[in-house]
Amino acid sequence: MNEKISFLKNKVYSDSPNKNIFPITTNIDKNGNLTIGGCCINDLVKRYGSPLYILDEITLRNSCKAYKKSLDKYYPGDSLPIYASKANSSLFMSNLVSSEELGLDAVSEGELLTALKGGVPNEKIVFHGNNKSDREIAFAIQNNIKVIVDNIHDLKRLERISETLDRNLEIMIRFTPGIECHTHEYIRTGSFDSKFGFGIEYLETLFKAIKETKFLNLTGIHAHIGSQIFELDPHKDLGEIMVNVILKAKYHGHIIKELNVGGGLGIKYTEDDDPPSIDEWIKTVSLSVYNTCKKNNIKLPKLMCEPGRSIVSTAGVTIYTIGSFKEIPGIRTYLSVDGGMSDNPRPITYQSSYSACLVNDPLGNSSKKRYTVAGKHCESGDVLFKELELGQCATGDLICVFGTGAYNNSMSSNYNRIPKPATVLVNNGEAEIIQKRESPDDLLKYDVLPDRFIK
Ligand SMILES: Cc1ncc(COP(=O)(O)O)c(C=O)c1O
Image (tube, rainbow, N blue to C red; front, side, top):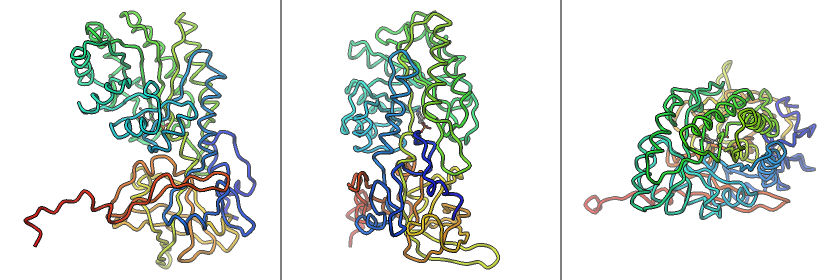
């Protein structure tokens, strides 16, 4: 048996989805094939094609509920978990998080539109970004969506808009708290050297500047220190730092009602990963904010957090079909699949690791071999697994890669003009398409051949 997925056999699941490699509904049917959400994966591929993204509704809802439940348990004040839609943005995801009473954070007009059309109420949406366009800011204001001011450029434009509209605007500011955490350099955002937010040393000047505006009303502060974080201490420190910022703001006449600690909780991609549970993370953040407020005699702000990966990653898997094999004696055997860096750019970008198994032999009961699993793109680095142990497999067999719900679809591309996969939602034996597969023709939709080039 493949030790990497031994707990699929033992079926020991944590009730915190981010601590599991698999969607909670993962199972093996009587024929030994993998099922998710009560659906046979072989059948899903026959029906919807390959590669295929699958989302498990129960795992998704469990993650949303875990955030809500723990905030209610540990934080005595008002609170709101906000889904960071960059992790996986669609009408369906907007609708699902909204039905679980979460808010949503967006960083572009596209994500804002998807949230609104998906049914997220505007008062539960926040708008981020270190270089928002004028059009995006106007769109947010027209839709009464709160803007998180990232820099002076944002502040000046919001001041101008509020004056033109002759209307008060509530704003939040994002700052960099100077916290280092052990995660990939590209997904670390809270240290001083970051493109996001105001440096903490600049806040006094900023508070004075906002006070001098006629219509801007500073009501919230935000910080996000990074992603895929396994330690709790950075978020304990963050809670304390943020309450001290509230105190500083108060000194300058600003009443801060909302405190948003960002996202960042890690998930279990492989057996080596051991992230804290959602409950432990929320407890740490809640107690840190609560205790520091009590110590300083401050009214509890509304506590917001912005999880992305830990909401959607474990609910998602990607299915690939095995194509060619290339054995280099004494070195390695390449096994190529029908997707790769266009549907999952994380391995080539961050050297990320995943867990995977064969759909028709999930426990690796047949004789095992190590493979390098390569994508189909014209790039030597397009490798999904440097080493993956699999049971006996052949062209046409399916591989299931776990933990792909976050930052796969949303970061996907059409490199080599490869159409993006479909996404199906599974629950209780039913499968529903939530994103259609692209076709090569779709990819031509925005190409224009000027008349003079047409013979
Ligand atoms: C501002 C902000 N909030 C929330 C998130 C979500 O982080 P995660 O997916 O690690 O929870 C990110 C991700 O980079 C972010 O930049």
